[in-house]
Amino acid sequence: MELLEKLCSAYGPTAHEWDVQRLVAEECCKIRMVCEGDAIGNLYASWNNPGPLKIGIIAHADEIGMQVNCITDDGLLRFRKIGGLRATSLDGHQVKVLTHKGPIDGIVGSDPMNDNGTEKGILMATRDLWIDIGAESRQEAESMVRLGDFVVFNATFTRLGEYRIVSKALDDRLGLYVMLKSLRELKECSLSAEVLAISSVQEEISTRGIKACRKPLDVAIILDVDYATDIPTAHSETGLLKLGGGVGINMNADSNPVLRNMLVEEAAKQGIALQPTVSRNLSGGTDAAQLGTMGNIATLNVNLPLRYMHTHSEMCDIRDIEAAVKVVVALVKRLDKMPEPVFVPWQHLEEKRS
Image (cartoon, rainbow, N blue to C red):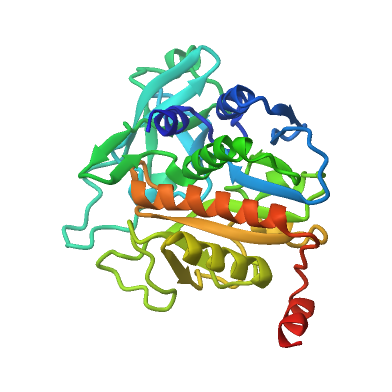
C-alpha cells in the first residue's frame, strides 16, 4: 500500500491539486505514458496509441478542505469549507495550512462552553469554528498565513485489522490508485484501443474540472467512492454497500446500461463480487454525470465502498481495491476485443431480441 499512502499523504484540496498531479504524472511516466494537462489542472496520460476505440479511465485528484478567509486580531484564522464538509466533523482536528512558506500545523477550535448539556449537544456551524496556528496576534499570523491559503486535514495513514485502511483523502485517492494499478496491468496487454487516463480536478465543487475535458472518448470508466452503508444507521432505500463486499455498481442514469451489463458479465467470469446500489440520487455526485452529457460517451461508475466519507479519517477495505483493479482490467480487455461496440441502449436491446 506504499503508493496509496503516498497519494493520500499528498496535499490536494480542490483548486490546489498540483502536488497530487505531479505524483500521478510521475507514476504514469514509469510505465512510459505521455502526460499533458490543461489550464484548469486536469492531467491526461496515454500511450499515444490512436486506436479505433477511445477508453477513458478517470478519477479525481482533489480532496475536501478549507480556505482561510479572515485573520482575527487574536491571530486566529476564519475559514470557509471546500466541498461537502460537515462542521460537526471539524472541531478539535489537526490540520495543515498550505502557506507560501510551506505547510504549517494548526488545530480547528471552538468554544467548549457552547454546550447545552444534552446528549445531542448543539448544532455547530462553520461560523462557530476557527483555526489556531499558535499565533498571538494578527501581525504574527499574517507573517505566516495569507488570505486565501488552503487547509487540509492532518491525518495519518493507518491499517486497522487485516483489511481496513484509514486515511484522509481516500475520496478519491482510492480511485487514482485503482487507475494507476490498472494501467500497470493493461500496459502488458498489447491493446489496440486507445486508453486515456484522466486525473481530474475540482470534482468536489460541482465536477468543474471534467467539464473542461475536450478529449474525444467513446467510453468513460469513472473510479470513485460511495457511501458504505454497513453502519448502525439504516439506509435500506439505497441498497447495502459494505466494506469488503466488492465493487459497488450504480443502477442509476450515470451508468450506461450496456456498459454496466458488460461489467456484470466480466465480474461473473472473474468471480469478482459486485454490490448493486441505486445511490442517493438518480444522477450526480461524480464526474460521470458531466461526461454522460458531453457527447456520445458511454459512462460507467465503478465505486469503492467508503466509511466516514468527507471526514479527516475515511475507511476502505483492501479486498474492494483488489476487486476494482481486476474488474476494470477485465472490462477494458473485453472492450478492446469487440469489433464494433454498441452502447446505444435501445439498439443493444433490439439486437438481443433478434
